[in-house]
Length: 189
Image (tube, rainbow, N blue to C red; front, side, top):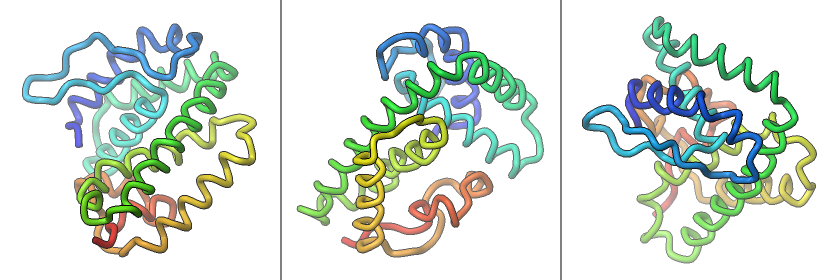
């Protein structure tokens, strides 16, 4: 998982270009920014990436009871989301469809060869988390996409072994087990 500094840097780099990104037809954009020393390169700018970085910062704030920089980022993101609500919802809907297909592809790969794919779960489940974060903003999702996610969740439940939170312990405060149940366990081998 990225560090707090990395998430702050990602969101800080995203904010100045977020309006242009929301107005574009693209789902993925290059940030063109350098992460803090020792961190991996920032992922491409996506609405799901923004929402995930924001949620991780909120989780850290809950665990540590601080981080004013994250609060300022939250306020700016909310301002942009309210000002550009239609573009935000359209982008969320398009990304929801793309992320659903990527999540489906991983689960199909796992189902065909569990031993070769179960170790990637902690990374790949990030797509399912993003789907959860994008869904409230995804206006007019086609019924087929909603049904696809429901079917994928049924498949996941059939091969899922409940257990401990799989990401860093500080993040658990922002990802409740009732909503993000798929972060509390792992896949069968």
